[in-house]
Image 1 (cartoon, rainbow, N blue to C red):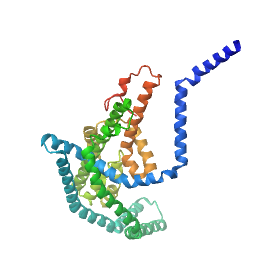
Image 2: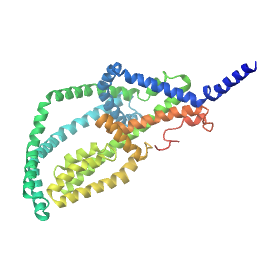
Image 3: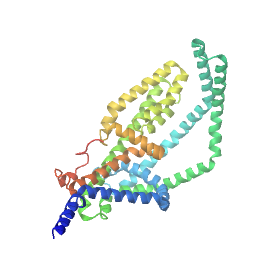
Image 4: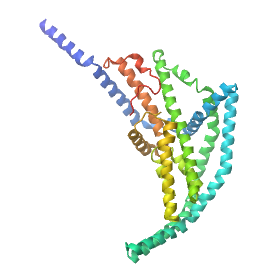
Length: 397
């Protein structure tokens, strides 16, 4: 009898310490989750049809999503102020957007094409200018011997003289890739307006529709999570597009004032590249520095001054005023997100990595708050604290 009691007592102790322990349950859940992930990775071939479908649908959804965040405030403004029906307001917004894009392409694309052809045609002249400057600097400082300098001159001249032709022949040799890309763009241009229309029409009702698949007790929390994601993504996209447009105008105006060649083309390059946080403007500066250095030392100094003015305006005025701290991310976090997303997904990852991380952060924070409530490991956390309003109660990561 005593042995039986000791056995039961030992089992009770084991049950209380290990089996009925919240940390043990958490570790078991983590193990099961990793086991599922491992099985999915091992059988990744079964997901190929899904990835192909995502690859086809993703461009149209991304384009429609960006335009949705741009046009949604306009549609709501027309409904509230002008008392226009929703469907008519959506049609007006889409027609105006298409008209603006057509005007931009008809007036801007030919000019940019001309400037791009001018840069390609000027590559041999650029090489001669580089060789001349190298010769002049070498005569003053005697860095290289004449034989070494002649070899460098010959290689530079050959490289730049063939570069423009290689660009054209490379494009022609990859004609099949061009055809594939054009067909993908055609599919995107056809499907994106349809997706955009239904986003504008049913976007506000989407969280409630989606919450119907969630258990009733978690629907409020789920809707709050979707609202937080929407606030993060919308503020980021609208802010980044506005800042990029301002950067395009600043660079184009500044380069035009100092008389830099291809000012509009360099400005148009700088605007979209500014969508890459921290690194975009610096990358866009490189071609301007090369053209400025080849033109004259004073032009190079002018390019640097224009960049410094743009940097001050962007970091001290535009970004704080337009963007604020809507993402609630530390700059170091953004840098690592850009590096990781760029390594995994290329240019698409660099552009979409930051808002994607913001969405993932909201999801993980919501799950963690739920775990705090139900694990009994955080007795100081109240249930109401998990249903926070967007932008409240978060620590910058």
